[in-house]
Amino acid sequence: MEIKAAVLSGLKEEFKVREVQLDNELQSNEVLVKIAGSGICHTDLAVRDGFLPFPTPSILGHEGSGIVEKIGSAVSKVQIGDHVVMAPASCGSCEPCRSGHPSYCVNFLPLNFGPGRVDGSCPYHDHTGQNVNGMFFGQSSFATYSLVAESGVVKVTKDVPIELLGPLGCGIQTGAGSVLNILKPNPGESIIIFGVGSVGLSGIMAAKAAGCTTIIAVDLYESRLEMAMELGATHIINAKNEKAADVVLKRIMPGGVHYAFDTTGINSVIVDALSSLRSLGKLALVIVAGDKLDIDNMVLMGKSIHYSIEGDSVPDVFIPKLINMYQAGIFPFDKLVKYYDLDEINQAIHDAEKGTTIKAILKM
Ligand SMILES: [Zn+2]
Ligand SMILES: [Zn+2]
Image (cartoon, rainbow, N blue to C red):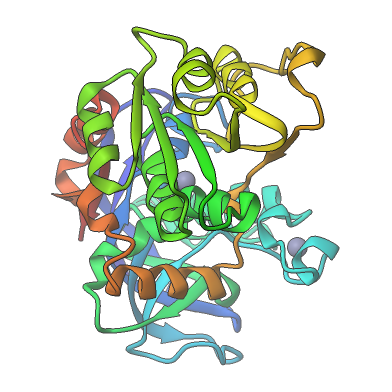
């Protein structure tokens, strides 16, 4: 069948929307999804720029949502017409998968960065018959259709616009899950969040929903800090003007906060996050820029650091929970979203990189 996809032809190039052939034959465990929307995530851009390996020409995108159009002979999890959000692929049989931590699946890399299926076949081709690498993060959602393994789809309610829900599969669940699944704050506790883009703001909303009574947002941009206040931050610090740990320890909470969440990956910011914590405090981080952390042992003092992948969530459980929270008005993640057409993908990326759009969603 012919589909439309935003194809990346070479590193650091612009995406070009064109026709691509997708095999009609589904493998027994596969689901064909008509994509309604796909968020754009930092990881798509990291691949475009060569920081993460995925060969070109390729179809990226890994925050897709849509409607099931066809299912393989062995699929039992979803039916035709179901609304689904797509989440990263996991094997289901390794120890992390079996113990409820599929984001730490030992087969995460081959399953999500293949390229193509695990058996080495590629279902996407251009008009000359040449392979177009796909199944990126198990889904390649910058397209009108996606072929995805049954394990990678999460059935969701039809009561919420389906095109809104794709980012729950990566950026939003990473932010909310880092707080709710990893840090697990109790009502009345305190948290500081460094970097309030889509991941950090999802953490702010989750912290508020969890009952944190001191929620400190740190960023360099006033507009993002204002958004953090709107979504639940009780204090904001512009790190351009002052060091966050100094402000926390001198003015906000002299003993330090219970939890910290870093979304920047910058070594000096991670040290600032650790310095803001009280003894035995917990830090979750989602990225470390460069190869290693350089931490003075004096700031550790019984504190722990947890590297969060996808917020350590079980997507089948956590994504419907986030939708329930959204419907109840305590997780208004739609406030982060701006929609673009698939043809406007390069504009959407430009706006996301400039920070004028917090979470861009391509509508198919
Ligand atoms: Zn992502
Ligand atoms: Zn696994």
